[in-house]
Image (cartoon, rainbow, N blue to C red; front, side):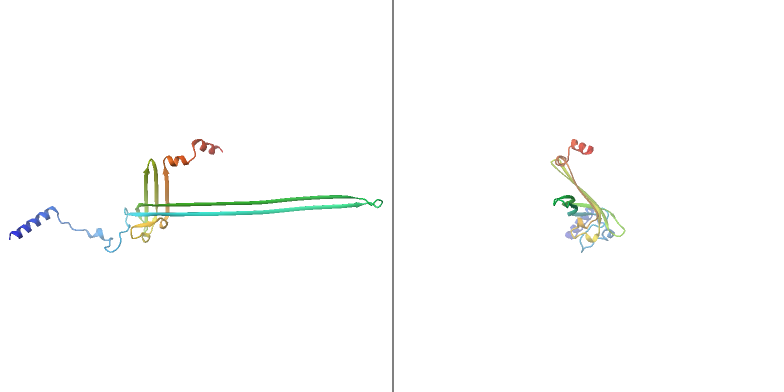
Length: 195
């Protein structure tokens, strides 16, 4: 009897300390017990894996040639002497052109940052935006990513590769003493402006 009274007393104390609340099932309507949790609502976070490599090359060669030659010759002989007078005239022109050109560019960007779902389009695609700033020893590096992601391109770990982002805008910029030392000075900029 004492044991059952003690059990009831402990149950009453626990119930008073931790009141029971009902769970709203509407909160979990889009969450499955068996599938991975992926971003699909406004405000959800998604991990962007930036893997961008670009390479382009262009070669051009031109060869042109032209040659003209005009020749005129005449010989006169007199009957009294066996000697003759030779008259000759030559005219020649020539032209040649050769040109070569080439261009090559390469770029590579790798990074990882988290972006947020800004809005959901009518077809279910997600508009994402993300920004990450890192400052080390006064040198600030900023990565900005935005674009449209299909929910099917989001992986099981809630990550998406940058090459799967439609209308992607990826900006990587730095600001600090290193970035400033790589650019031209004020005098050089002024002279480039004039000439």
